[in-house]
Each structure stands twice: as structure tokens, then as C-alpha cells.
Image 1 (spheres, one colour):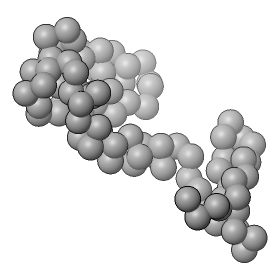
Image 2 (cartoon, one colour):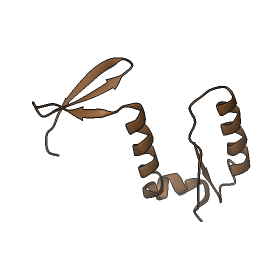
Image 3 (cartoon, rainbow, N blue to C red):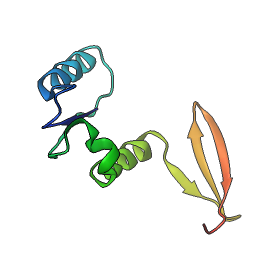
Length: 88
């Protein structure tokens, strides 16, 4: 969950409270407050502020490993998905 310190649509204090409730309910939660003067639209205008955190979280949830055939295995819902590396 992301909060933006200048967001007036979803106040950071409210986001923090929601994160606390999720954690109390046993939900694996990541809450990050981002500094931006762009307010609520920051997530649209400044993706570089969010991408590293999202990538890290996804890598924790869906670890990938390369196979000798140049394919990537990703476990999703207990099943492996395969993707061929195309170099793009």
C-alpha cells in the first residue's frame, strides 16, 4: 500500500490506519509513504517512485528462476508458469 504525503484524496494517516488493520488481520502488508508534490496523481506522473517497491514485493511473492532451456519458471498459485526469454 502506498501513501503520498501530499495526497488529499486518500490521506496518509487513513492509509496507515488501514495498513494497521490489515496487519492485525494477518494480511501480509507493505505500507510505504512517498514524498511528492504532485498529490494523488503522483502514482500516474512519477512511476519511478513506485516501481522498485512493486518489483521487490512481486519478486518476494513470485520468485523466478532460469532453466537451461532459457525459460523462466514462476510459481503462481502453486502452479508453475513458463515464459520463453525473447531478449526484448
